[in-house]
Image (cartoon, rainbow, N blue to C red; front, side, top):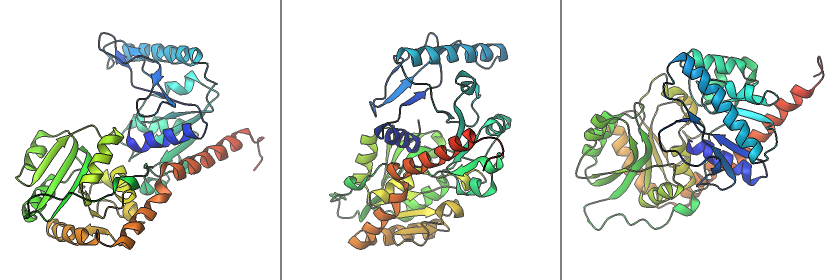
Length: 358
């Protein structure tokens, strides 16, 4: 479960909503957590982990698994005595929308993160009553579903407590500690990062998260680089990282896909009052932050490296730090949850309105 969505579900649960998250099925024969159970990150969120038959890529088995999963979800629902859901959200647009048939009375919702990338994505979006996208670019284009598309930004916890005195380094040659966290995959600009670490040899870089590309990870190895493979779904890991670094970085490549992303790590940095240095990966995503003191948008590796030193100097300005924290408030889980509830309530009201009513 992505951190932004996880924080949103937690906030909705705290506000009194019944929240259940159905995980992808685990094939029989493989270890699986008990189902249903409480989330280890939030005891108010219920997790259901169905068991499936191996061979999901075979059409017949895939269809059989959909029936099995639906039955297990309904059985768990009844055992927990949960009320029938008002809405069923497909967290991944490419997911098969069979859960909508499991609870046919529920509002059909898709939580779409990115650009639609295939027929399965388009099928789910066309069948939805409302599409909640985290991408300003996708919302502006209207998506496939036209008027049903609504912009709901990614959310973040409040990491203001993670900012404190930074133990930069016992080595007097190190001028500062900067870094980034999350998933390091194809959006990451590895060549730019590698060049920046070489140019900024008197800075220490901390890269925390999961690496999908061993070659990319090897490109980042250097005496001034610390690589920590850690699950950033764990709030403790995120807090520990934010307490270590003085500046957060967002080193994304500009592609058609990254034009649509809305990274939660950017929000976490701002919430903690950390200056940010970023590539210009998505003008629309960065629009609300671009002119914010403490946010530096770099065009190339040389500009990125230069901005890192400016950002480190900016950490001494308490007014600037407070401004960064204020900029994150509309994206905190509590604020996004209120917006989410308003969007869903509007959709439910429209659904109940008599035909022809406005």
